[in-house]
Length: 555
Image (tube, rainbow, N blue to C red):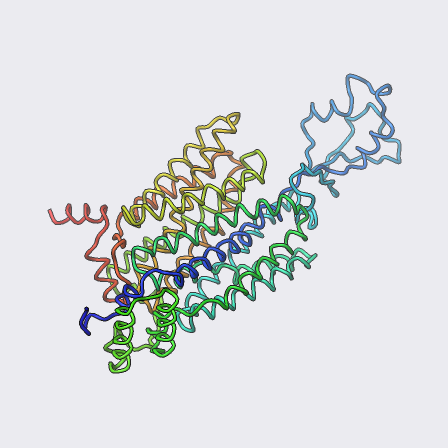
């Protein structure tokens, strides 16, 4: 049996083992992933761009008064529009109909002006959307992109605020606050009939809705290294499941208000299951709240049906917490000391690590959301495409879990970035008529954009110490939202060339893959308790590209 000196939190977790309690935590993470996906991607259907045409008084006049027999076949109204190529769904011909200035042949006297009223023509995808209700047409089309960007602005502040709060007041408390707020704001959004208020509601919802990063921290802190990849990737799988489920729900509920209410009701799941779960005992230990932590650890041992040796280790660990002063325990420094990301700049290894991860977080979200939210642009049935897009993420989560444990986290991340970049750039060379091939390449590119997104959560959690682990995770999440805010603007490059957005995403991904090869592998690393431990690990275990650079520099 281990001696007293060897007793640590990781040692306790090792003896308690993997069991039902950790599995329930992972189930919670999966359910949160489902809810987060539905709220994050709701604009795919709720803000669906329903086709529209201009309601022109002249069009009505022509339809009523100019029958086929009275038309001059060499100068019909339809021919005039085609020959001049001067009319689209955002403009109309202007004429004084009651003055007799036009008849059914002299179309050449017409002038063009902006359309003042539109008629929406459903293409069968949705019955209503906010595009119809708020008249988001023509020169107001940018509003649709802005709404999603504003949601991501809210998520950016989510990362900046709640990661720090989770390190200060606890993971479980923050999950409750965010869950209650998301449900309330979602119901209120369904009742809004004003564009400005809707924009505000979506932005505020973004502040509260993304709970996955906190749940990743909570689940990973109470499992051994070989289970961390599984615990985090299952949350990612939940996001993919949520994407597919949302497509099915939206297929049957095609009116946006009813759809918003439906996803609001789903948010109740978060509140129901929250009561079944405990605070992270590792976090409680780091804050000196030993009695609460020990109570949870004994509960985990009981639920997992731990053996007598495990209970003995727990008793000895309890005695060590009672007898030792706080500064001699496994965490470093005062239990009330607070750390921010700026503290990493003091350490050379952590500094490089933070800079590279910042760019990686930006790119993974920019590419992932840029491709996901533009699923309608690739043609085909939007429900089928969205369901397949989510469905492909389910096996990819299991494959990523296996690869993370076999070949390492950093290898999976930079390989996925490189493959995503290759698939995105390939989109440029596919002819427009090959829709099936275009969809296939798109889906594989999207899958490889998802893998680094979820694996970066695991990787970040493993590279930073306990007292700033949630801060680092949510800092990465916040930077990811900057990428998501920028994604609609990159998607707007479609007007220059349909494949230009994908080429841009591809270049960003390739660069991220190259930079990630500078960072260390964390597959077998234990959870760090101090900044010094994390910095030493970052410097000693350089990535392959950094090792090459160091070798050349030494020569």
